[in-house]
Image (cartoon, rainbow, N blue to C red; front, side, top):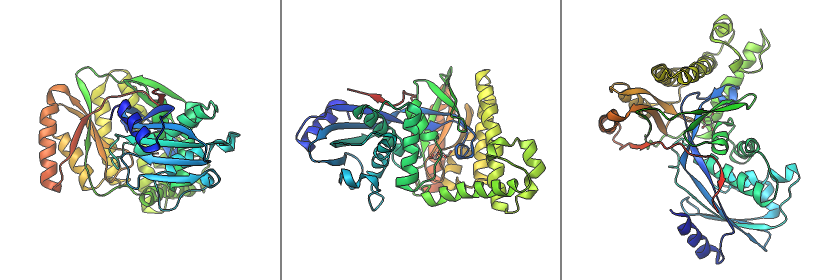
Length: 388
Ligand code: GLA
């Protein structure tokens, strides 16, 4: 929808005009999966898909949430109740959990607000539609309350909302990418120190192609939180024989020297993925910087194999899309992106191979799963912003 249509929808719903319009994007991660909450590196980019938020003050001491595209569209929460999540996993918990962070840094809400949200990140696709909602709320309320928080704090407020209001113990990657995105750049982020660098990713004759499984199997908070717990378990076992802050601090060589101390076979496999993925991510970004895109692509494929075999977050749908892509000439690399199970793959494909890629991968996928995949050529956009 265009901004004018959103403003018309705000006026129609609330009977008064919106005072401000904000936007924050979803993201696609090129490499570095399930490394963020283990202190490793990630390499995501913000998309031009995202969430718009329109807002106006009210005199009723309530927060009104209205979505143009989410089920159970409207919710009203009194300011006094904003300190706790709403029952029933309502979507308003994403922005509400962000708003609840501001009083903790001394910015109380003294007035109510009417809000309207509209997003075009396909939901459940692993492209961070929830991070886009959180970060647009963090950016908006920083402006509305005059809090002037940094983009990194906006990402942290979004992550806190996931932990406290959505019950997902996620890392910082998605919210960081949404806050700090930059057109035609990926973000090489150290998730331990939060130091980062914008790396140009305009590739000569190659596009980033996203393929959506539309799979009914989504990564739920249970399967995600289990992975986080299994990594902690591996770390605790390693800590019995050597002090270690986080799994990302081990090189592959060091891991091989102590891996037999991780007695649980599942925790062992999870740790092996994290350690090898951290190393792959560093190698991939180095290769990318020296223009060696072939090595980058090979590491993407190895990342998928490790997520399939050791981290066990892929499944038939993602595996079919990635493995069919690997067979096609002109595909530099292909892997699942985001949390896993359902969601999307990300592929680097030569321009001339894109039509064959879409046709052949799409056909093979439909034959195997009975589902039609969707393909998008990713446009890499800027992070959170004021639109009007
Ligand atoms: C989800 C989480 C991120 C990250 C990825 C996996 O998107 O929100 O923090 O852990 O999964 O890399």
